[in-house]
Amino acid sequence: MRPEEEFKKIAGDIKIIANAAEKEMYSHDIGDVPHIMTKTFFQTQPDFVVQPQNVDEIRKILAFAHEKKISVIPRGAASWGFGGVIPTKGGIVIDLSPLRRILTLDKKNKTITVEAGARWSDIDILAKKDDLCLMSYPSSKFSTVAGWISTGGYGINSYRYGHISKQIVSMTVVTPLGKVMKLTPSDPDFSWFISTEGTCGIIYDVTLKLRDLPKSSYAHIFYFLTDKDAFYFIEQAARQKTAANVIRFVDANHMRETNEIMHANVFKEEAGVLVEFSNPGDEQNFLDLVKKFGNYEQSPGYAATYLWNERLFGMKAKRLGPTLLASEVILPISASAKFIEKAKKLGSNYGVEICIDSYILDQTKALIMTTFLCDSRKLKYYFHMPLVSMLTQTAVSMGAQPYGLGIWNAAFVNHLYTKDHQSQFNAYKATVDPYGIMNPGKFLRVNSKFMNIPALAFHPLFFGLSMRLLILLSPIIGRIATLLFGRDKKVDSLDLELSTHACAKCGNCIAVCPAYLVTRNEALTAKGKVALAKKLIAGETVTPEEAATAFMCMHCRACEEICQTNLDLMTLWDALERRLEANFGRPDDRIKEFLKTVDGSKEYWDMVERNS
Picture 1: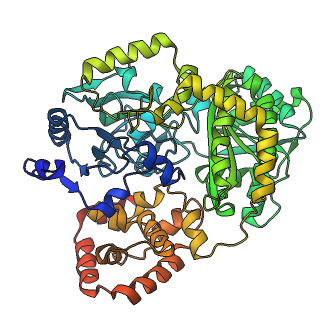
Picture 2: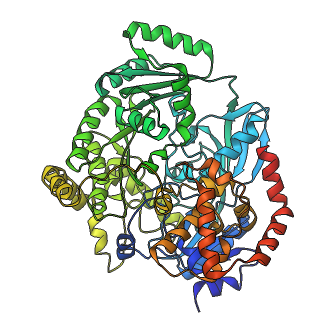
């Protein structure tokens, strides 16, 4: 008997997803990794997916998994691209994204308690009604709270408020053995659930600190001739403990791409430093301080405001690609300019333009995201993918830490954790997860199919030697690849096929989709329909059931308004529905029933009220 059939006998009200097409949605994250790679190394298709609604249901799932010795993979919005939520040997995916209720808001104590799948945007919308707001948050504001706690924790406003762990009052977790614990930062177990990517258990709810809602925002961009000049400015500002919320570095290439996306010359195409404040006093103190550093050219106020407001759409450049690859590291500020110089040289060897976006974390560290455009449909993509790890290898050789591990960064584990810390982690995991069922085959050590032989490619020693060799040979290999396959050109406009590839798979659309709110089926969302359109274009088999789901849509434009890459989704849906109707007919009765269900949904009208 298959695992999902056995579990159905005890599932009760737990929603189970066992349809092959729907399970495929849970076999990847936002990373553009060719199937030939993931399928060779891992069993990425889960046995089944569950969507629990409370702690007791989570405990029931874990008890079943423990009894059957089957893997469990916690999953939020899957908006991180390094494989943290990809199954490595099938198992049960616990989809926590529907667990998004905001449980309590304590205005007096400035705290809020939310479920694991709550979106940062939901918190902000509700908190602002009581003149409160988030302290820090990720660049993907439609990611889940537990997801960011589990994978990263640094982002916007981290310069002022620090890592997200500093803003947690308490959180409820469930261990693989079913033990429910309410942890505070003073508890010894607390740290084992921060940035450990769901390997020690499941975060169920979190209580966070909030801050008073600022009356306004004051943003400035300072331009510099070189990246080195910009980071010298940043070092001086950080050393003075500037009372900014954000200090952000954006290089000239990033400024150029932003102009191209806007079809306007709003930004000077030089290195820029964006600084943002919450009150005019802090702003004026900084401007007075800057005068002591020297004379620096500033952008017009509207340009600084635009770049600040665009902070949540970091993947918009993907529409020029249509693929965007990225390396993320935490690097000493003092080494950042030198790393950027090396990164750009490495990129030029492969015929790609490296763009840099960096958030300063404190007086000494910067979170640096290195991105470049390419095209996953072309053979040259197999040369571009290793470039991500080569960039990370270059950074760690200069004292950097990888920003998370997952699968694809697991070889850099020794640059993130000491051997002693790894031993302590393994000892703790052995006590809470004795059978190793929780998110196995990644993080500290990659496990794969075929007697674990493919996983040797991710061994730190072998991987490090390979990357150093590739870096050394990059002027030759990169040039040969460019001669054979040419340079990828930026996309001027998006047709139907390019639109499906330009989709960032970020999950923003899921957070605002009425159809998903009612059905909890990702296939009905923009993300799901883009995946369906890809199958159609590729000539793959589409079932009548898959075709019918594409019509379960309110055409409310919410997905289009929040799209990371500004895709013309309404036009895409019209084209998709025409193709499907020609092949399968239009399911009018199901459409009417769907609209009736949405109209009668309390959750739907709560969403309307919350966003009004």
